[in-house]
Length: 376
Ligand code: NAD
Image (cartoon, rainbow, N blue to C red):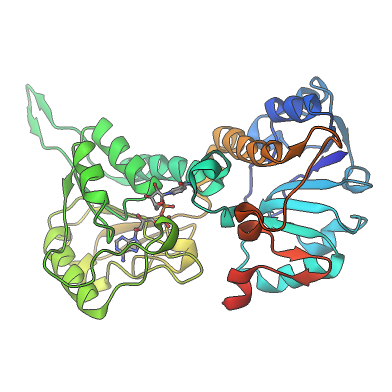
């Protein structure tokens, strides 16, 4: 049973899919670990660190040869998998909707492509959920970025020279990233408010000491679809929400947007006209910039200035904290594979009718088999 760990080739990707900790644990389960040379370098893990826990380090061709399981952070280009054996598993964040053609190519290679971001949101899969582990760090970093682009302080300060008032920070979308953004902004001393379409978040916002900003009295605002995900909202709701946001946003210094709907373009939450009402020097961080953006004019990977407001479009935020994000990502992959480990054959076995298998398996025996992907 050989597990290969790839070096990430995607531009700007600094994470790695295995850490010395998880390599050691996989070895303990009876697997042979092969790590591509330099795989951990940008996440502060040296080749020698992997060797010290029993992995071999070699070229891509050498690690792929005879590998039963291939681990990655982002889905590798199919042509970079030359030499992978048929029936091998590819376990990574495969961006199945965004890279649909690639999924067909994985099927063509005869491998089982397992998309970790399709992990069902069920209790037993919580420790395997890369979206949660990575979003948590993104929420934290969004506030740090906002603070560094803001030409003022976050906390209220009473000094001999006078008082500096606290920054007003508004978080839109209170999932894993949003909750961490609220907590981080509070720790920095901002006055925090937040909104979401899921009514259940109201209590969570208050429990973190922030003020909930919610559209009330509009039909169909529950906003909760299957698996804890948001659904697309009714037109009436969207209109009411836009009005509420317009009023609130004009008084904010910092806005962090995190709203995503899986498989679809991110919902537009802030228009150019709304940005124009904010005071000069305010900062918006759009964590959904890569999925089309919650904020009009946001560009992933750039800071653009509109009406005197800086708009930071996040681009792979977890990669900017590669040491921590890799450690958590690696644990998610280990928690997944070890949960299905068969003691006798010393390899993981995924039952065809298992909820996790059905959720994450994209390809099998040369075909695309994932329901969610086929339905889209
Ligand atoms: P997400 O990344 O899918 O979306 C971020 C947030 O944006 C969500 O709270 C969503 O409701 C909100 N949103 C979407 N459209 C919006 C709009 N138009 N306006 C305002 N807000 C909007 O969400 P997430 O962070 O992955 O988490 C969603 C929920 O799922 C949370 O309750 C989380 O605890 C739960 N969860 C459970 C598991 C598990 O049980 N294994 C794993 C992950 C998340």
